[in-house]
Amino acid sequence: MLTLGVNIDHVATIRQARRTVEPDPVAAAALAELAGADGITVHLREDRRHMQDRDVRILRETVRTHLNLEMAATDEMVGIALDIKPDYVTLVPERREEVTTEGGLNIAGQQTRMDEVVDKLQSAGIPVSLFIDPDETQIKASAATGAKFVELHTGKYVEVKGEEQAKELELLRLGCEQSLALGMRVNAGHGLTYWNTYPVAQLPGMEELNIGHSIISRAVLVGLERAVREMKQVIMGVPLS
Ligand code: PXP
Image 1 (cartoon, helix red, strand yellow):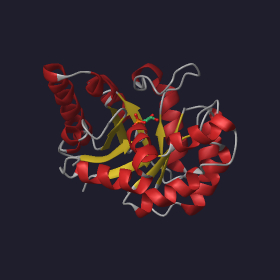
Image 2 (spheres, rainbow, N blue to C red):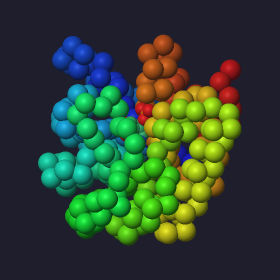
Image 3 (cartoon, rainbow, N blue to C red):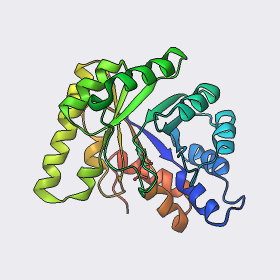
């Protein structure tokens, strides 16, 4: 069954706006789980703009579902992951000046480095997911690293409408099919909202959707438990009332 990974980064964004202690993403993770989240996702960025090391350490102790740590493939982050041992790691590209993750990883362009990082993490028992565009070259390169998962980037799909969106959805469908055929499991995410998620949720073989900004934005207005519950319903084909 398709699962929902709730990305709680932006709870920490609100806290960091004042460099205070509230709202605590650890409390948010517990509430999201009570509301039906199947997993908790956090991105520890190099500049620590939202999640802090303390958050990830405590979440490792408190998360009852699974903890997905998104991070860049740097030596610092690999060291933190090996220490904290999340349930899985999603490797993402990262540039300091970007507002959010832009574009998928270029695995084919840095095959040796990615092979090495995936091996280091997976040898320590941490399955790795590679955040890539639904592109055949990147999918093949991802499979060559031995990574257990890919996360297909839905950024292009969410930016366009109509026929163009149908084309992007077809690329995601194909990407899912190709990844599964190469023995990888498939997640997807980025920019998904209450209005554009259902078609992605229906793609055959899709395992987990990682959704953050839209859920936390809605949570500010209607509460986190309701926002998570409603996204779970959307995934199952119940539109927002
Ligand atoms: N998946 C990955 C790999 C991401 O980097 C992000 C953003 O941190 C997301 C999913 C969630 O994206 P959004 O916040 O737009 O739902």
